[in-house]
Picture 1 (cartoon, rainbow, N blue to C red):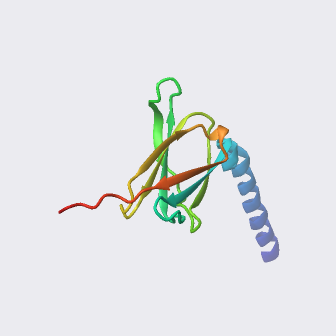
Picture 2 (picture 1 turned 180 degrees about the horizontal axis):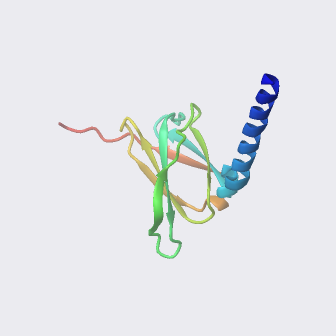
Picture 3 (picture 1 turned 90 degrees about the vertical axis):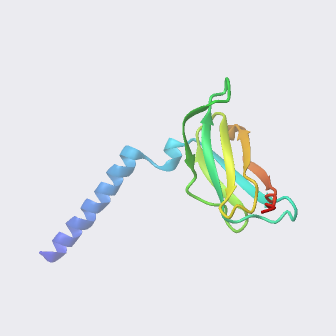
Length: 129
């Protein structure tokens, strides 16, 4: 009896996961374009780990922000790379160093027109105080 109960639990869990994915789909189902960013230091050319990326969808007619902006969940890896899924169209991407050692960098791109975008970040100016 216990064996049958364990089998039914496993089948039920598998069925629930199948229904969830069928209804909601995978990330690729929502976002149809993949873009990779390669973030490097402007002085050394070395890859930058831990850079946050914000994405805002823009109106192609006047470049105003449409809807909400979102921080991408992933940070750049040890090779300075981050790959994201997004929608086709014009987007503003902002790159931010969490330690504030580098100046934030913004760029507008059409993700469906590029595969990899190289981002070069400069060190922030030091305060005199």
